[in-house]
Image 1: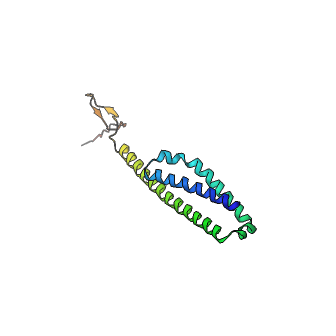
Image 2 (image 1 turned 90 degrees about the horizontal axis):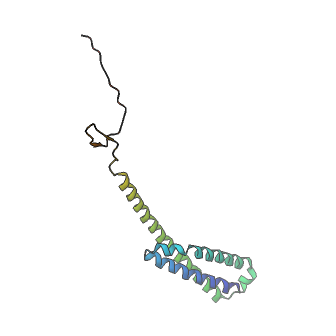
Length: 140
């Protein structure tokens, strides 16, 4: 009973991660992001099912070698898919970071806004500053 439950959750989780991987590969980030809630739910169910299996050692010992092998192979498939999806997410994150950096650099390298006008009415980027007149009294 527990093995079938874990297998069903694992299959559903695998299908969801395959869909997420496909969407990320197609650069459909909005739809991939929309899967986050479902992915969290399945992750919680998966963790709970694994904990229940581990807690019932007698049940674990009663599983056939074939059932253990199927669970192992499905677990490895899920682990591989999660790793691949993690790599895709890292690539997307790096690309987004580069885009944001380029935009920030583009906006920071814009010419300074007009800060003052000279007596002829011509715009100047020269910052307004207080200048004090200096006089030097010299005696010869």
